[in-house]
Image 1 (cartoon, rainbow, N blue to C red):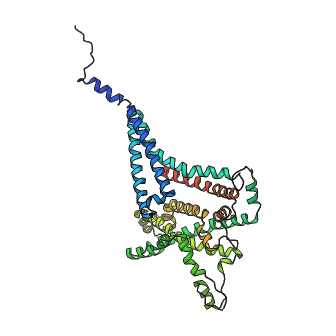
Image 2: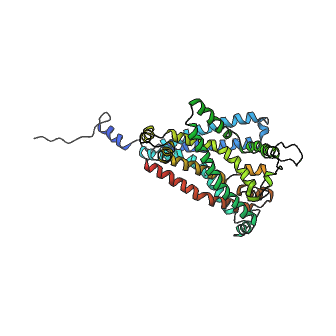
Image 3: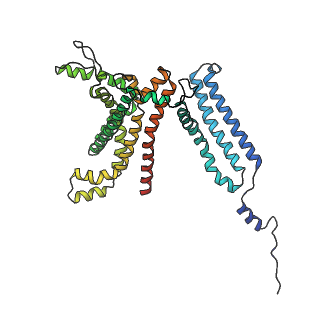
Length: 387
C-alpha cells in the first residue's frame, strides 16, 4: 500500500488561495502614512481657510457672497477629502483590524466635534464658575453663595418653575386637542386647519414677540389703544393695562407664556397627529362594535397608544422652556419680576461683566436639565425594549 504525503501547492494551486482568504490582506504602511498625512493636511487647510474668512475678509474683496461660496466649497470639499484619506488610512491596516476599526473611525470626527463644541465648553463653564469675574483667580463657592443669597435669583427660579409647569402641559394639551379634532374633518379641512395651527412654527421667537407686542401694546388712558387686548378692554368700559408690567400673580409672565404656547402648539400637533394616525384602525372599530362612545374610545384605546409620543413632546418642550431667552429679552428684559435663568445669565455676563456668577447660573441650569435628559433617554430605551 502506497502512502502519499500532501505537498504544498504552487502559486497556481488552491491551498495558498484558501490561506490568503482566511488571513486577509497584510498591512500596507504606505497607505497608512499617506492617509494620516492627508487627514492632517486637509484639517489644517480647512481650519486656516475658515480663519482667513473670519479675520482677513479683505483677501476676498470683503464680499460676503464670495466668502459664503468659498465656505461651502472648502467645507464640503474638505469633508469629502478628509474622509477619503481616512478610508485610505484604514485600508492600510490588516483586513481584520480594519474591519473592526472602520465604524469607529468614521464616527470619530463627529464625536470629536461634539466634544469640541459641547463637552469642552461645559467643562470650561463649570471650572469658570469657581473663578472671579475675569476668570483669573479662584474664589471657591463665592459665586454660588452670591447668586443664592439674592432674592432676585429665587424669583427667577420661581418664574422658571411656572414656565415648566404651564407651558409644556398646555402646549401638549392644545396640540392633542387640535390633532384629535382635525382628524374628524375632511382631508381638505384637516390640511387647512393644521396649516394654520402650524404656521407660527415658521416664525422666530423675536418675530413672535414683535407680533404679540401689537396685542399687548399699552397707551395712556384717553389715547387711542393700538394694542388689541387693550382695545377690547377699553371698548368694554375698562382701563388699559400695561400687561408686561403687571407682576401681581405673575400676570406678565403668564402673558409671555401665551406666546410660547402659541408657537409650540403646532409642533406638538404635528407629532401627536402622526401618532394618532398610527393607531390601528381595527382596535378603534372593535371599540365601536362594543358600543363604546368616541370619548371612551379616545381615552381607553387611542390615548394609551400615543402616550409615548405625548411624553416625548412634553419633554422636548420642557427642555426648550428651561432655555427660553429670546421672548424675555425682547419684551421685558427681565424687569417687573419676569426674569428667567437664561436671561439672567446673559445680563450677568454681558451687562454686569460678572463671568463667574454667570457661569454659576449656567451650571444651575445644567443641573436642572440633566435629570430631564436622563429620564428622556430612559423612556426612549424602555420604548425600544417593548417594541
